[in-house]
Image (tube, rainbow, N blue to C red; front, top):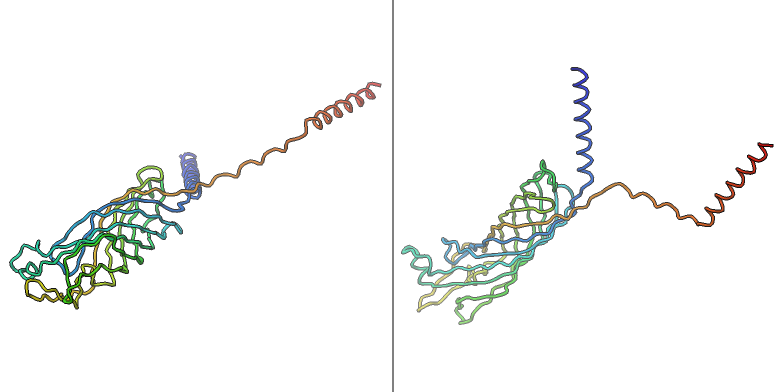
Length: 271
């Protein structure tokens, strides 16, 4: 029984040593990913309704260590809202205001990403981790439609906007270097004119002047699913040095010299 216990102890010891060696031989250098989902705006127009639209994008992440990465995102985000769709008698003022906007933005952001757990591709014990991220982004309109006209009788354009994204998600290693992930991103902005209707603006419709609410800066969120590919680096033993290529004639000369010396000595020994 004692011998069996000692044998089992050494077996577990060597198994752990081999597993630790395996973990050291692989390193996650970064990640490429694509994603798609739904986006929704929160601001002055129809604030009680969520207008969902399809967003999509790509990202590249540089993994700094086992838990922290630096991620660059590019995302197409359509946003919009319509006062006429509130459909509530209590919001008759919004229906009378009859404002709408529909803007397609491109969003470029740089975020720091933190894993809560160790994540290693191909390892069943470390194949899942939630993560948290935050950073800074830049929102620029690609296509813009709105019926807002200010009191000077002018149409306005959607502005370029600075965003502060907060991101929470999870990632699961499916097979090899391929991962599935889902995430929710909430973006604070530095503008109240994402919907063209700022807190200090007024809108004239059918002889009635409508003043904007004082809801503060506009915001929006995205929820998405995606597929990513981890850029793995695998370390192994150093390659064996190549043997020096000797000259064919020198080998033959050496062998013939050795043979002649041996035969000469043997001749003297005989005598």
